[in-house]
Amino acid sequence: MTDAAPRLTPRWRDLLEFRPYDRDHWAALRVALAIAIPMVVLWAIGRSDLALYAVFGAFTSVYGRNFPHFSRLRLQAIAGSVQFASLAVGGLIALSPARHLIVTVVAAVWAGACSLLADRVRWVPPGPMFQVFALAAVASGATTLHELGAGLLAGASSIACALLIGFAGRVLWRKGPGLLHNPYTQPIVIPPPTGGVVQRAVAYAVGAAVAGVIPLLIGIGHPYWAVVAAIAALSVPSGYHRVLRATQRFVGTMIGLGLGAALLAFHPAGLWAILLVVLLQAAAELFVVRNYSLAMIFLTPLVLVIGEMAGPQPVGELAWQRGVETFIGVAVAVVIVLVLEWRGRRDAERSAQ
Image (cartoon, rainbow, N blue to C red; front, top):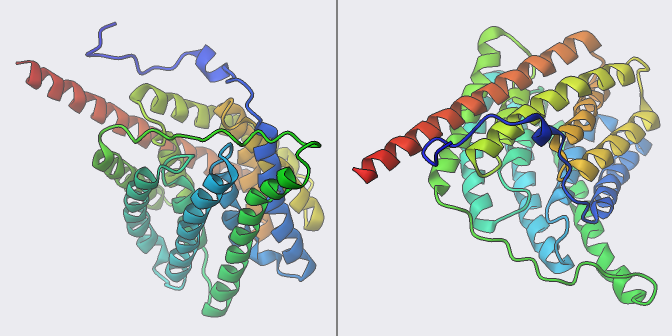
């Protein structure tokens, strides 16, 4: 194997490898609380229809998982602001009868723009996945100005809740230093992104556009599932790790669909559905850094349960759409990786001449 032709095919042991444990339970707890609190409030006031906005707002809590508290607050405030903007843009698109056509173009542009911002700010986890996911998911369903306003209020409240939870540990450590050990005292230094910032943004934009168009052309619902799958696979640095991430996402999704179908067979609703969403998201966050395949096994039924909360749908059809669109998204990502690797080798050969 030469440097000019690096290996791209992942190995089975890479799919099954677990990274070392690193206080992951704290990150899982924060995310679980950030989702649980706004969803329970919405259930209590009879507005569970706004759960989608609340969940995407709560995703603010995934940023800066092991950062010191002030660094995490800064990072989450930036990511949360962009997350709110994503909800707002998606909601405006949802007002249009042509939303299914508009969202593909806007999501592609948004992916590229958020990628540039992510590299500038160096937020962790990297990439524009959560922002594009929020925009495209909200844009996929029709809405009214009144509903959009209520949804944005729910999203903003959820983001504020996530920020408070992310910083609450600072108060606990200060009030009980002898009782609790503060693991978040070492400064976190995020290295600057490697070269190709513009190339990375273009890859995200092209991936989002192509992955979004294919489901539209073949008439499959939820095209944003393909878009998110493509962006997730491209959110890691090297060609090999991108192919590995694509493989992990597909394998984990296929297994997760079985778990999701089993859970949806019980038609969870109300507090039971909220409990499922919280537990599944906590489990996904617990393993997402250690083993992405396992995290997807929990994340896939989470998405299905949230979809069920928005409105009952045939489980078989929902699972089939999720599986096909995940395959489309990761396939698009792998093709982009192959093109980028080919261009890299060609440029290297030209430079050597």
